[in-house]
Amino acid sequence: MNILVNGIETMVPPQVKSVHDLLIHLKTGERMVIVEWNKQILKKDEHRGIKLNDGDRIEIVHFVGGG
Image (cartoon, rainbow, N blue to C red; front, side, top):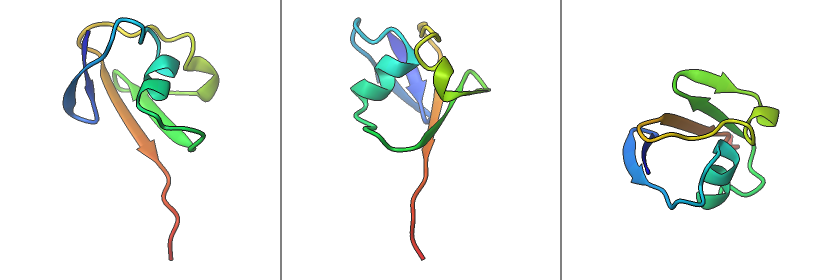
């Protein structure tokens, strides 16, 4: 399946079926992230229930500390 992740066309393997699976596949770890799926910001508890489809647009933003 091909999806856009942060504006980059990305081929994901068949076992990546949900937003949760995608975050694991991309190795985001335990980082605090905000996910936008097809222009809709998701709550963390929605990640497992959102099934990905070919052509979906995902934006992932994570927080960076510094000073």
